[in-house]
Image 1 (cartoon, rainbow, N blue to C red):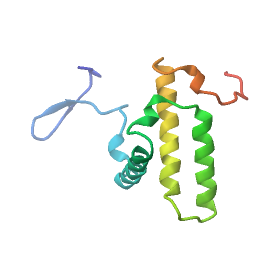
Image 2 (cartoon, rainbow, N blue to C red):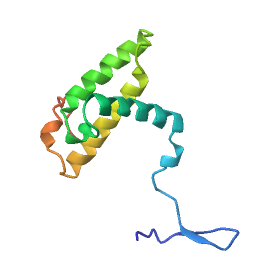
Image 3 (cartoon, helix red, strand yellow):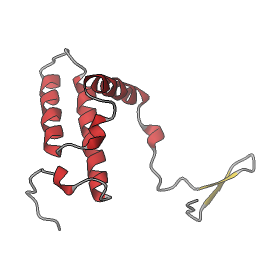
Image 4 (cartoon, rainbow, N blue to C red):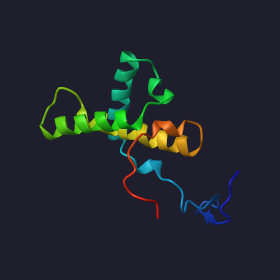
Length: 118
């Protein structure tokens, strides 16, 4: 069990490791999660469940995200374009983490690199 070395004591006397510097997924909107889940369910019906986890080029996710963003900006309501945007962004975040952890091929990150690393 990871341990930060810091403790928080509650009025009941219970003690837990400090929550400092830990991610806060409890702050993510449940409505945003719900809409993304609905969008992913539609994808599971159209393709296969968890199909996206096999990986695809990040440029394809960017292209889809940008098409949905344009549709949203044009006021189109034929699909939940904002859920599609969030889903594509989530795919990219996942792929970046999997590439960093060497679980997925770095070839999936096919985006141009315009800036030099400092």
